[in-house]
Amino acid sequence: PIEPWYIGGPVIKGFGRGSKVLGIPTANLSTEDYSAILSEHPSGVYFGWAGLATRGVYKMVMSIGWNPYFNNTEKTIEPWLLHDFNEDFYGEDLRLAIVGYIRPEANFPSLESLVAKIHEDGQIAEKALELPQYSKYRDDPYLKSSP
Ligand code: ADP
Ligand code: MG
Image 1 (tube, rainbow, N blue to C red):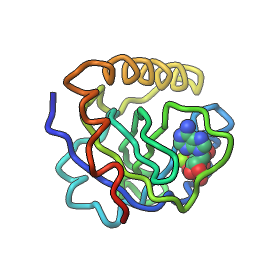
Image 2 (image 1 turned 90 degrees about the vertical axis):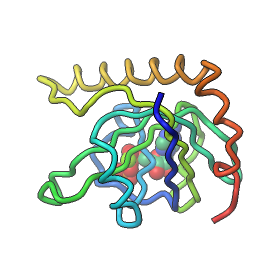
Image 3 (image 1 turned 135 degrees about the vertical axis):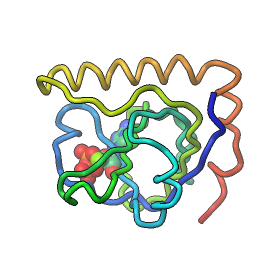
């Protein structure tokens, strides 16, 4: 297990890669405020807990990776909350407690294999977050405090 780390802020618009169309919406956070903490953590797939002030705390699996739109100079933070929402929550304050690491970034031969891998990541996160060593962070006060 890793020490948990924390990031949060308003949910911003991403770059419309069709993640919602694929059934994998990701609530992007701005990387600007977090360049220091991000540089301490390698690109890859992480899991943890996500707090939305007016909604609750949810399991999440998150990709942190380089964005070709920024000439590989900036990472994106893309958490997928493992919950079905009936609406978007752009602009809402999203807080993340990142408690575990699944795998490094990887290339995939097809979109289908990428989507399959993300669903596998989601199942790993679902299970891991039930373990006492990770589930205890569901109650982390950071997830509930206001900005
Ligand atoms: P964008 O490129 O703007 O990030 P996405 O296709 O990734 O667009 O969709 C992300 C948006 O969908 C989020 O900002 C959020 O408002 C909404 N959303 C709905 N359900 C979820 C979910 N389970 N996890 C993450 N975001 C979700
Ligand atoms: Mg997104």
